[in-house]
Length: 91
Image (cartoon, rainbow, N blue to C red; front, side, top):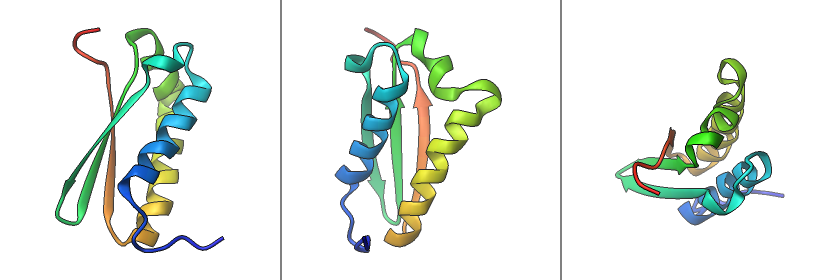
């Protein structure tokens, strides 16, 4: 399977949503917002406060794994993608 250089940002969002939903307790609360700024894309992953620890993982291992997936795709896109894991301020 080849990944087109014009892979839409929506595909990155869906990837992160599906992976995050598989590991959290409240899968309905998973949200990903994307912001494009030139050659950089910022993906903000938001989960419930209880699931933040799960998404980050022990010593940040899960977060590093998610970022590794993003880096692999962003290399094909020739764009820099940053994944930020946040707790929503108001739920």
